[in-house]
Length: 249
Image 1 (cartoon, rainbow, N blue to C red):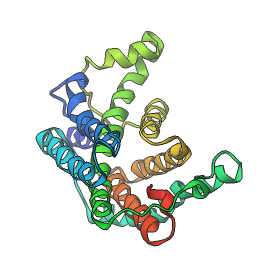
Image 2: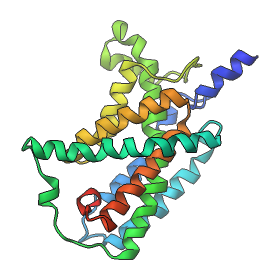
Image 3: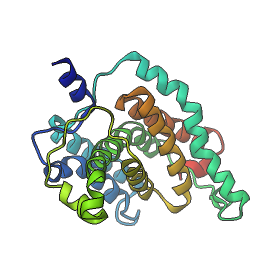
Image 4: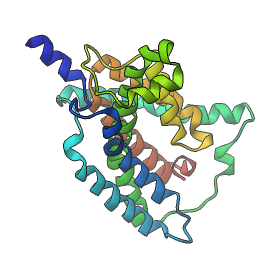
């Protein structure tokens, strides 16, 4: 029994539904948020867009809430996230200066001086710090990483695409450790990166690899959620009050 409890503690995907059935609870909040964010301001003004993202995404998370597993929370998880925050910020910000120095693109120089009004800013701040930190970690680090971890061992027999598609019909298997393999980490990193803009790709890769290392060391999804939220908070504050508006444009 103790061994079974230990195994269940690291499997955050419900075992009573197939990966295909679980796709929609994990991807729906992500798609709603991204879909609303993709609408031009001529159709949906900034303030209304942020409010709609908050209402619709939060509703989706609450609707599917019984599906999600986060694991036990301990105060040490918040402490680890706080200690890791400076490194996470460096991982996100430093690549912007690197690609500028290499002459690839200079986001800092290209950024305009547009100032966002306070109310839309704080709506966006809440969305980034709370909602994005939750639904992105659930989708990428729990669902995608768990799915690819289960698909990885089948690649040699079924091929890359075949193993990924076939695994959707399977139930999440019991785990003796976190679902971290080269295949799952690389795949999840690519999915996480694809959700960002082109000039953020390098930052997204470096940031995700660092937080995955923290995930491995801490064994806690809470560490990833908290540091994700804190990083988004710090970026927003640096953008609004630290003269780095290009970070949160």
